[in-house]
Length: 390
Image (cartoon, rainbow, N blue to C red; front, side):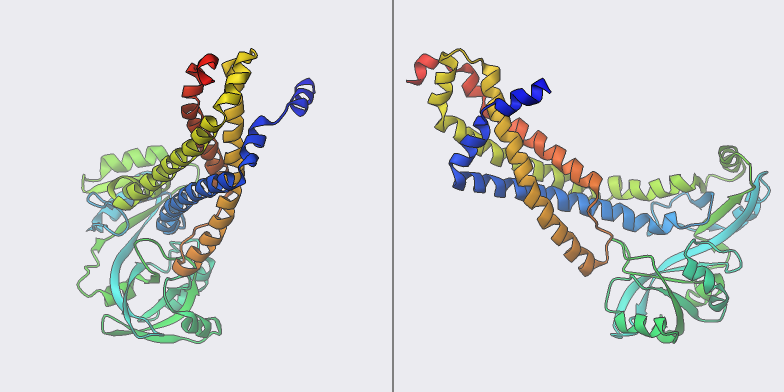
């Protein structure tokens, strides 16, 4: 309480100096808001990159995932022999081992009739592979020849097609010169690597891809017996299977995708650089403002030093200005970012949302940014001799 009363009695020199030049204050706040906007957008895109490309992974009903040793991510997947799944069933603790087929193909948008690329997934409908309730309800239908389910959150102009399917009607279109029937919808969403997704049975997948051998699978989904230690099963599978197979837990499979976009893709690097650039821009802008303010009031600071005030007090005034600039500049930055997040989400169907953690992260970065600028701006003030100021 004593500290609070002391702060209440203290003259807010930092705020008085900033508010004295209102035009300079507005320029400073605009610069900080712009820097915050850069950081918000880059962090938002980065998170959307990871979330959109791993949403399918997170929905898998699998304790352990088998993939080819050359697989880098879902879009760069290598096949392996189906015999490895039969071998996996010999490992103690394994309950089931099901195959999944994944590939990209060109299909004709049933609404615009334009060709576009889409991800196609095939699995055994008698063994549900996903946690999507709509897919589970439609499992009997995708057993029918040339029948597929469509992602309602796909990127593109599909609103009329989706409206027909939501009314219970079917929609026909062409996939690789083959007519298919869309009988239902599910919700997954577009990603940076795919505009949308089709889900069907493994038999329909092989019909759509006649060159795909049934014996060459894209992924193996392993479920283990209840109560069995998953780590022991993973170790046993690695020892039992050949080097052409990667054995991953569900969490490791998700991290494999994230790691690809983080380390092996230029997109993840670009977003990280964008955040750093926003931070650097903010440091430079705030430094220019605080440095100008210090130079404009250098005689007043010299008077304080001559009266006996120490450097720490004067530094406190400049840091007070830095924190005020950080907080006031953050508010328009977060407001504009919310609007741009909405526009981006509407235009691209990417999962880009404002979160409390991200807002706090950018606020902390903004305060650090302004504090660094304040520390640089006060170097001249610390070494100045009051007698040299007049």
